[in-house]
Amino acid sequence: MRYLKNSFFTCLLLFVILSTTYSQQVYPDPHYRFLSGPGLLQDRNFYLFTLLEQLPGLPSLLTKDSSLNELAKGYKQRIANPVSKHDMADSLLFTENTIRQVSNTFITLLERNPEQWLPLLREMRGSGLFELYAGKSDAQLLHYAWKDAANGINYIINAYANGTGLRYPVIDSAAFYVRSPAYRAAIQQLLEQVREKDKPGELFFQPSLQLALGLLRLNHRDEAVRYEPMSATNGDAYRLIKKTSWDKYPYPAMLILGASPVAKETISETGKSRCRMGAELYRKGLAPFIIVSGGHVRPVGTVYSEAIEMKKYLVNELKIPAAAVMVDPYARHTTTNVRNAVRIAWRSGIPVNKRMLCVSDAMHLVYVNSPLFKQRCMTELGYMPAADIKQADLYFLSFLPDLRSLQANAFDPLDP
Image (cartoon, rainbow, N blue to C red; front, side, top):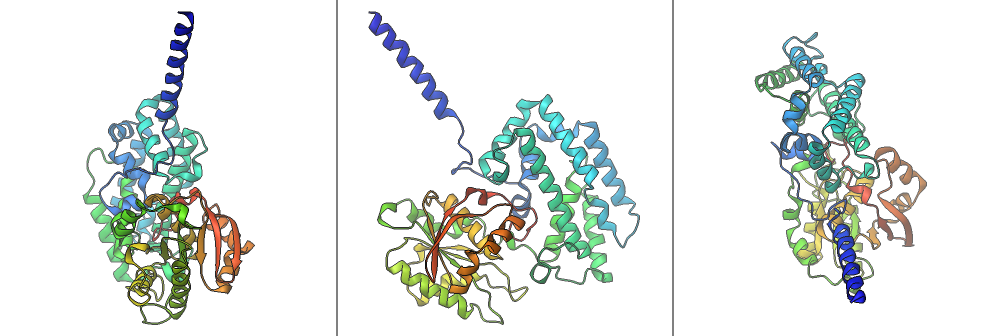
């Protein structure tokens, strides 16, 4: 009887431990479903703001705070009475003092109402878009996420209202001369639209957010959302991934780095050459899936995405099965070629605990495997998207994916 009683309590204890263990949320969540805000451009660039707007209880919590209300009133007054029409968009920039003030307010509200903020924090951690801060406390996570979002707003306003502060001015600049009277008039119209949208209960960040998104649209800079949802763009491959036996292949996926055309051709000769190398490795059975990477980069304003054209070449000319080729139609640099490939692997279900293959020409791979590339990644992304890079051939190398690649980049609104 004593043995049975002890066994019962042992089993009960084991059940409680296992239930607790398996009920804990795993972050980031590979099955995470993103919430939708008023538009894809906002969701892609400012998911924190989408969450603050959409999660029940948070909007009312923010509008009831006196300090955030004062900020909202201040922005409304500045729109209505700009100091100078020449720099009128500057009235909606977030100053360092404002960023610090809001951060302190958020943390205070979190301490006072932890249960109301818990859904937000779960969404943030589950999404992976704040993965760079995954190891930090809830307060620190909120602080850094808000700071990134505010600085992202400032980046867009400075870049597309004033023509300043762009990281890549040659390929990312405004579509118009920002000091021309016609463009200043267009910005004035944007500000008038923001003022017209003013309504009771508006959150303090919304006027600045609306201006930033309006500036992107005004300049036809919607690259970040042209192929959403990616699960549909790469739908055939996503379905095939579920049936794939990964043990049959040395690598789960192969990344082919893009190369911009120099004129009006749809795909560069360099891009074709890299595709041919990748196709040869695919036929040898090195990987079951190919990820081609490259966005709308050069010539500036091009209607062609490097990745889309590379997939056409692989499928139509090189006869690679369409379902075996996934596109990353957003990346604008080698740093984000690698980062976005890791994102696609994670979101699609490709194992990220195995080495990925990377294909390009010899000189390009020398750069990828150099301290210079690592330094650029650290400067522009804050981390290395590829770990333990190993080069076994002139035309391909392998690396381990780093899940910090899921982190959204506030300073790259065309490919956040």
